[in-house]
Image 1 (spheres, rainbow, N blue to C red):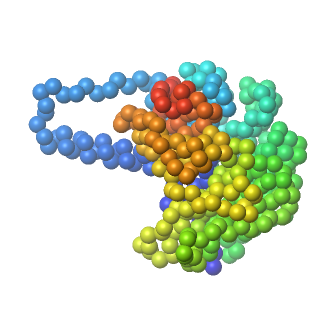
Image 2: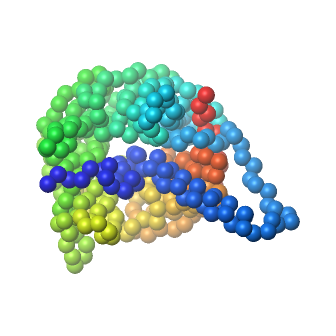
Amino acid sequence: MTSPSPMDTAPTDWLPPRHRRAAALIALSVLVIASAGAAYLRLTLTPKPRTPASAPTINPLQVTSNAVDYDFVTPSMGWASLIVAGPLPGAGQFRVFRTVDGAKHWQQQLAGQSISPGFSPITVQFFGKTHGFMAVGGSVEQLYRTADGGAHWDPLGLPLPRIDAITFSDATYGWLLASTNSGLSGQLSHLYATSDAGQTWQPLPDPPADAAGLSFRRPTEAWLGSFGTGPPRVYTSSNAGQSWQRHDLPAPAGGSWDPTMTFQVFGDLLPGAGVVVSAFGRCAQNGCLAPGPFYFTSSDAGITWRRIPSPPGLLAYQDSVRWWATSANALFKSSNAGRSWSQVATVPTSWQFSVPGVLDSKHAWASLLVMAGYGLALTNDGGLHWTQAAVPQPV
């Protein structure tokens, strides 16, 4: 039986990690709009106070009506992507902006046609100060390469129209996971590699049929997640994607995995070494409340696993043991690889945090949803305090 498509599942739980910042904004926007509507109804049904509280001042340079995805490579240099409406329904134009002064100013660098109606995730990988790659789009719509520190970007060709994931291990070697529709057989995954910085792509043996997601730390350490029924699992490769080894995740203590449940499994490579795997389950029958999600970590390429308690929010990683997690209005930190957490900061109730991006022990960024639209917050003291920054303003 063909596994259900991710398009038939809950929108946030089944997205790859690099898309979750944008997906979190979707969910938060619903909450904020609903809260605003409820507040309006309450106000219309109660007497007007004699001295109403003044509304917070909104800086128009810090808010946009377009949902934006960000990726910084240093505290001062970063990129942002957004979708603006196009002439035809269901399509638009992605635009990429650059900042070199810590989000004080943004300059548009790139523009192109997009099939995405609202969100355009962005991933930037740099190797040294000059060479880097940028992937734009949920299903990657465009890949760019720079050799001058991001001042200019050259488009690169892709072997198939639907690219699910692209990753590079250095300025020369990279891999991509693509998919094609094969009719009654469902969706098939295909793996490609480049050894010339994305100039050409060579097909590799097809990965496992249930493969999803792609992470390469180096040619000798690669990871794939999975999507399908049966026990949740990941795959590893030690030979640059030529072959894959399956690793079933350990069942809950004293129990076993429900063989009828569908699992979506993601792997996040930790900085330096190790991996965190999250398994999201969905029951076969309607109305069934799936347990989890389940979290595991491994430091020996999947040979052994340690179960992690559910974190207090969406995860980001400073290094292999110091992790960050954000809920809607709070930041938590762990110094022992997720075994325990402490709340370290709160943000204004008018803000709603998305997944943060952590640069080092002091610097991080996070997308925001605010009452007037979408924003960006930065920290330079390890998350104790956050400052709302300027955001790209499409013309």
